Length: 472
Image (cartoon, rainbow, N blue to C red; front, top):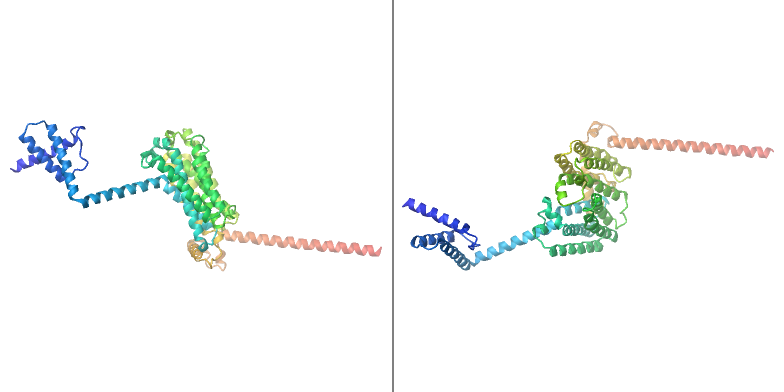
């Protein structure tokens, strides 16, 4: 009996599988549960054992019975039906939200907002009285970035569909329609620029509008026609920190040295970053028919030269920041260590042009930028003076100076000369500055003394000439 039941169950399972996969002419039920399948299979087995009808008709009856039983079970269990509908609705809403985030290139837009915030902080405050300006700047910048990203995807649907790295974008997969993407891009552009205009100033607003035009218009067009597209894209990435600085200064500080240093840093940083990325994905870019340097060469020689050249240019920015008075001289010293590794990976790619080495350059650029911005703010002269009447700025000032003090404790030369009476000025860079200043003071004294002597000689000569005239 046990053997008979086991054979019967095996036969039922086989029949269910056979029924579901038998022929595409059979309508497969959309909702099958274990109980309905088991009951229907037993009915089919009973009917087939007691009748010699065509098996296909029996299988159709099986599936019809299964559908009827599922319908009756759903009707008799409204809570389950409601729960299923709610789950499906929430799942659809979640997938739609993810699609819009992909359309906005959320990670790229988050980076844009971060650099804009760094620009705002680099201005040195005030912050508490400008929290509304800060919020309008960051949200408006993010919306402008999202709009530009959406417009870019609208114009590159055919190219994205041919590239592996972009085949999961919402317009390619059909998660969003062209109309939905177009409406979203327009809404983000209007709301972003309006927020910048109302909450910040005309200069910051103009910068936001120019970024949308540059990215979705000029950059997107040039990707298909010229290798200069990378340089245009770098300009787009250099604008957000200037927007933050401009918003913090009411539009008056766009051309301040600190603002220009941040813009130059972001511009130069993007070139090795994107040249390395395009080399890793050069085959994909060829599928999309994009004009990248790496797509137009065989051995990667020009790409390696460009990465190395701009890595060297980037390594000079800490010195530029120090020379123009935006940061203390310690930033230049720390920049040596930061850029030494970046130059190392760039030269390694130049020696061995492999995807692995190019990816190393790309990954290095990902942590390089936040590290650079953090060190810049720590050594910014805008944060030297204590912010007493601004709670938020005072909090930032306290944090910056606490980190500075911790840095002195970890600094080797500070430990070596800690017993010196001039311990606070023991930094070799500071000493160099002090000696330079001392030399300048001595030179000024010598010039003053020489001038005094010359004046005395002139006076003496004048007196002598007067005496001679009187004698005559």
